[in-house]
Length: 381
Image 1 (tube, one colour):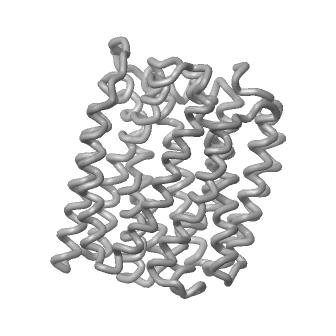
Image 2 (spheres, rainbow, N blue to C red):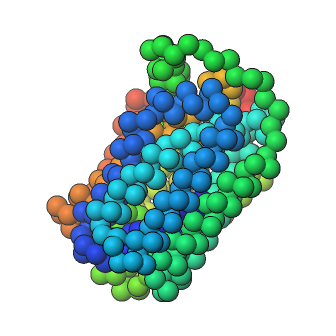
């Protein structure tokens, strides 16, 4: 994740420097989303039929090779905006397999009753990487994008090596014949559980509409005037808030009113997005992004806990694939949405539209999914 975040900073700054276009920032997100959308059904089957550690290791090796291509292209001067989009499409395809596979590994490492705390610790580890990655990437970018991509490649190759050290006792997967029923089993499973569908769709639309992070290069260069180092800090700010809150949730897991807490946190996410959109102060922008990240981690922990607790192991790959599609839609497609609206209406109006839209989604989802609103405790499930 440190490598992926470093790469995100370098790609965002480099493609904006090449094009001066917010639209291309959105296209980077679209390039990563499309393969995830197209491969969702295949991804779930691979994660359920083959050794998940091997699948993840292969994915990380390919990501390392993609970073090598970015480094070579930047060093030789042959890398243009179209080349970056093509490479990010490949990275998106690989991450489509890696994400669900890694998520499906977690329940095999801890007892079921502490999955909510494990999800919070997992989120804290991820957010630590999200803090360090952009900051390191922004600093290294001063030496040029080639340096950033070279370090990214080393980190991806190292991650693949570390993953080989994980040992899991898992019964051999039952390889069901491929059919339409097995292909769509993950979708059917989620549709049959309104609380899970409500949780992941709420998260999807909130981040889809409130995806201001795609426009951070514009804010850093043209609104806040802070350069690449400031961009790194802006990208790290949500993770600082998320890390703080995830550690709190790991030590003091939610004991009651879980559903209501999730809706409230998403509303705070929307308000923080609006404040960031209106801010012309670097300090206020960092604070609002930190609050945004802290609010977002609530929905992450609740959603992950619900999915992991209620899904049998033999289906975790397919369910995690659908869940990852929702996550990818909110993140990568959210970046595309932000880029398009910024291109049409301007950067600040685009962020404000997203924040207001998030608040509207909260109120609509409270009516559509009362099962989620009334969840009291996760452990009892």
